Length: 243
Ligand SMILES: Nc1ncnc2c1ncn2[C@@H]1O[C@H](COP(=O)(O)OP(=O)(O)OP(=O)(O)O)[C@@H](O)[C@H]1O
Ligand SMILES: [Mg+2]
Image 1 (tube, rainbow, N blue to C red):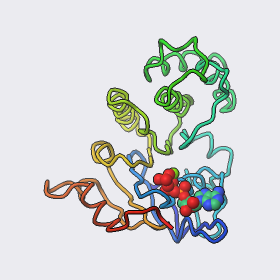
Image 2 (cartoon, rainbow, N blue to C red):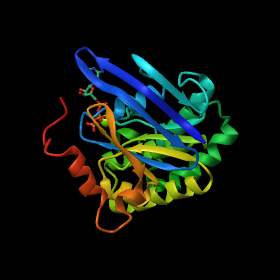
Image 3 (cartoon, rainbow, N blue to C red):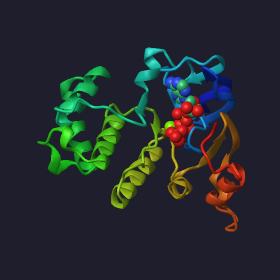
Image 4 (cartoon, rainbow, N blue to C red):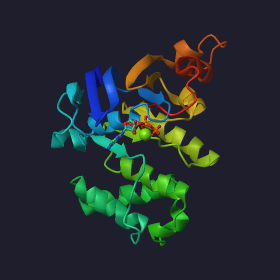
């Protein structure tokens, strides 16, 4: 059963066609990697899935309804590409703030927040303000924030960026655990090897369209092709940014 569906979705900004007739679906309980060169339209698509950006045309259904419905937002854990957090807050305070926005009570937030702070490896940094955090530490905060209300669907914009190798492995384990509990994950990435390791399916975007969409097994299954090779073939000789 599909929890995310896009049909012929389009979005332009001025003269730039960021998303150009995009169609794909994501099935419940699967991990889908959303790949493509810089400027391919991944973040714009993700923002439309969250209801932050309105499409010019096409149809988007998330969890059976319109992405801007409040109930839909509650069922999604979102990690933005670039997060801005109040710099003077500590991680526990930030999670309390986000938990409150999701309608969680302090009694629900506090045990979940302390579990997640440990899980993302921020235990030693609990008393520090976020303005003192490194890029990777802030990325870990973003992961904790997306997981806090134990949503059904995870939409993550480049969650692996800035994570050190150990944190990557831990985050992969977190994703596998979410999947084992029937959660659905769509994440964008430039990390093809991570995508190959963890994804059930991959969607490769080019110039606002899905130019490849299939199971990771189809890409890597016979041992002679790997995702990097497929990606290079599809993206071809375009070495620069998308226009
Ligand atoms: N608010 C905006 N105003 C104008 N153009 C925009 C806006 N947001 C995105 N674009 C343009 O839309 C296109 C797609 O951008 P998008 O951020 O969706 O790409 P992306 O695939 O996420 O790239 P990256 O891998 O670099 O994050 C780009 O050409 C970008 O410049
Ligand atoms: Mg992006």
